[in-house]
Length: 173
Picture (cartoon, helix red, strand yellow):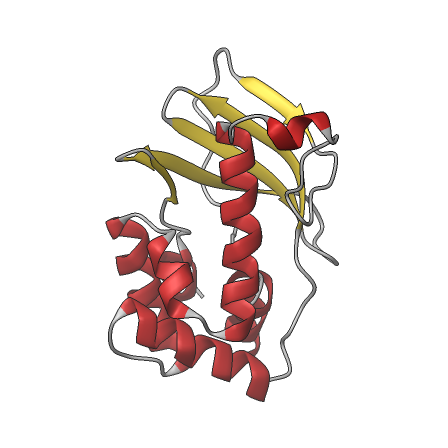
């Protein structure tokens, strides 16, 4: 019976937005613990007047992606993914009966999560590590045994989430 493991993946991954997959490359990195992880808001009023840093852009992307996954806003979700990330979402969508473009699949996954009552609160961002044009976000999902990692890459000046590895996880069940 595959329905329950797939439901768990949906709950922990897609209804929440960013899932931890992969690893950072080690080496020197900038690591910043969160001040207001759930909203991505600056740590102080002084920070609000500074130009958006890589970390602020990443926090904003993660927060907006999580909200968009829960509401089925495929435009927002897919815009925040690399091309490989979009392909991963499309492949994963087949496991829950969602087909079509990245945008259509996100809508289908959100509907599946609503039908299966898999809605979860947003994950809390624990750490953001930036090294050049690569980044890793460490997230804590409610009820998860351990924090998870999401890899990102700067593409044409914008941060994008790399593949979650969801399609491979479902195929391995």
